[in-house]
Amino acid sequence: MVYDGSEQDRIDRRFMAAALRLSRKHLGLTSTNPAVGTLVVRDVGNGPIIVGRGVTAVGGRPHAEAEALAEAGDLARGATAYVTLEPCAHHGRTPPCANALVSAGIVRVVGAASDPDPRVSGKGYAILRAAGVEVKEGVLAREASNQLAGYMNRSVRKRPEVILKLALSADGMIGRRGEGQIEITGPIARRLVHVMRAETDAILIGIGTALADDPELTVRLPGLRARSPARIVLDRLARLPATSKLARSANDVPVFVAACSEIDTLNKAELERAGVKFLATETYDGRVALPELLEDLGNHGMSRIIVEGGADTARAFLDEGLVDRIALFYGPEAIGTDGIAAPIGRDHIPAGFELVREARFGEDSFAEWIREI
Ligand code: AOF
Ligand code: ZN
Image (tube, rainbow, N blue to C red; front, side, top):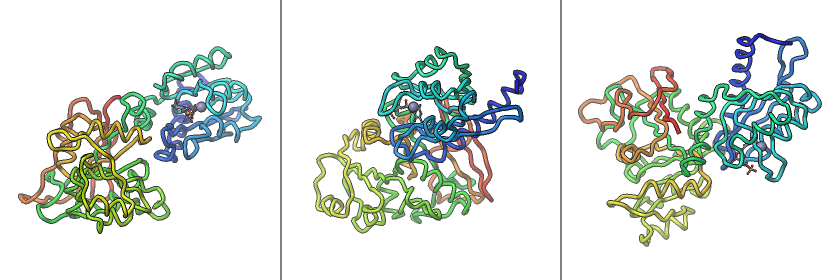
């Protein structure tokens, strides 16, 4: 079936949205590889039908295109492929996806984001065009780079994407002095936070929050505990108690303590015995040097980390311009004068950020901003 231009655009956006949604399934599970989605779609006269679906496999291989083509089999011949990232052009353990699409008989490729990897950038689309495949680039490109921001950051900035997540009271506080963890948002918002955790490589907090709240920072959704990311504590002097929930669960879900490289205490030895790993960090002005730490985390293969607290840690990342995504949950109640003020709020988002999502979860509201890479 041949559609006119605007109808075709509508169809293309619809299938790309479906491919993006599909790829989200493996966000946080594909190591240093981006979680890409591919749909093979065929129209033999009764409208477009999906005949193959693929997501970059857990661990990063096989690539999405290979998975989708395998499912489509012979039905790929004459079909359109929707890919959320430009198909690869380099020879890894398998031939490039661009060539695989050609060999399978795909006649049209609709792509979302371009790949910043110099081995691929522009070359994947060029292979397709040279083989006579029709290519349409940039469909839902912004949505795709939003979702692939972890990979994009790692490629371009050589460090993971930093997501700042805060729960704020109606009057812009993140807690009450001396009370440790208090409930600001309701159960739906809290579950959403756990989904966000499952889609990242690590959750980072400061030692102040670790001591005050003794948090566990795992994914506590039914069936998803295995998707708990690593936990990182900024703890220059290695003060995290070996009896903390974090240390006690270190053999199940990794815990990294970012401490000054010279530190050598009894507590450090005890934490190591509990399975806690140490990241030797440089210090700057009496604090862990964050840009260097992030570079190290990137070298550990991390693409996305969430900064979850407290106010000082959040402020340090903001002050150094190291935040790439801001996710704010607002609860319905005010905390008042003994509150701990948040370092940020929806009315003073730093320049360069764009609002990408707003939602309500029960009594709570949510908003998310990202900045361009
Ligand atoms: C695709 N489809 O599903 C993904 C791609 O180490 P390799 O050989 O797996 O290559 C990693 C690169 O492949 C990565 O930097 C990115 O350019 C691309 N990822 N490409 O065609 C996929 N995940
Ligand atoms: Zn590939």
